[in-house]
Length: 383
Length: 149
Image (cartoon, rainbow over all chains, first blue to last red; front, side, top):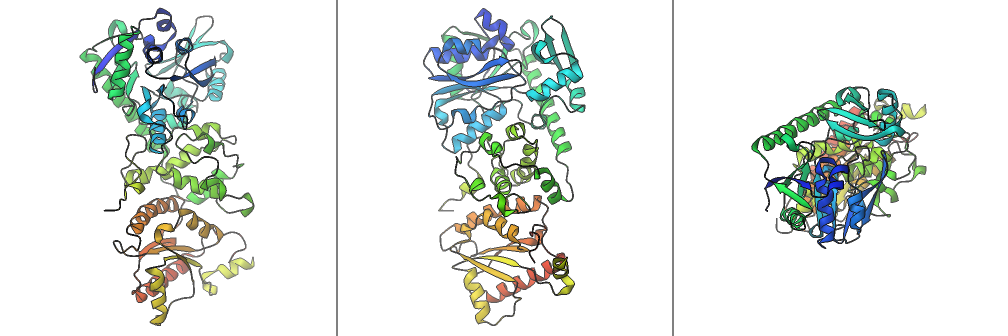
């Protein structure tokens, strides 16, 4: 196995296959890496209920196998969890997790040589609180009755405990303000080709549909990870058919175009911007949660944005936010964590992206996609 | 309000301009503007820094938030930096700074970059004069705190 190859694979373990999404390949691959001592630890989500889960770092193979299954309404980001710990770790990562991990790698907080990033194709995730509300308003079912969820053919399907399926198209949900988080709608990284190995159910055809995972190997580390899982007998793979490869490329293209459309729709040029920003930020209570959760920030406790901000200054714009707007112009990956945690519901990700989009376009620099350093650090002594 | 009368351009309102000058070139430029007796308005407040690379976006934001109507970033010509490539870094940093200030909705005249060498006294005086005229036309900065003229 080597870089650039594609496979279709599934777990050899019956119960993982049953509980996990799309054949449980990712779960088994992580478990195999742990079992064969390729890594010391694995990051998985420990499920509390359908809407809540906590990310944990574990070295217990059974815990990894038990974590099987996908959750669309737990928008976590693993990058900060493994930063500054110097772990030899394998972890599943959506596009934004992968970008955040690479950004932390550039800041020397994560050693990327020791980190196996299992990329997951991601069409978007949902906010747990919004999802609960959506279930009551749109689906007319109690959030507690939900047993499982799935996204298929543009429809969001919830399965209740009595075995019934409730489906509504995502377009319809998003029209009403529910559905995916805003940052996921305009995200254009649907297949994380910046990770070591990109996994997902797009491109699995025929009898295997829903029972296997399509894998694209993006790096030597990824090849090592999959080979290890096959050798350990955790995973079975086969070559994908041409139809599947074409289908995957098509879905990828459609999803990315949709993301671009949303981007054009959300980021419209506007007048009176200063008033707009002042209005959006007027409720800010200086809690600092957006900085604490930001997966690309590695400044630590004492940082420029907090140390030079004093509420008593009563400036017309908050210094904290001005510094963060500048700082994130070359670092914002649009993961949406800041909007999620904001206690006064400021759409921070959108604000950060308003500053980040033009300059990232101008300098042709996209954070988190490769190991290229921010343009400022490209000025060298002998230039 | 009395501040309105004072900040009305027709009432002889003078803009406040904060000019960051690097020690080796543009500060010398300001000096030779004085020695050469080139007339310039008294609107600029010069802050000397050792290199234009020292100018942090934070300094510029602070100047605006404390009531500056315009902020000028000046330094040595590219290739002439006393610290080899300090102004190359300024150039990139300025792009980010400019982007934030523009996106905030602040007029582009309020933040300007210029390379001025120690011998270009006339250029410095003209620069200050031009900026002052531009700012007089567009009026006080929207970021100026209440009560500051």
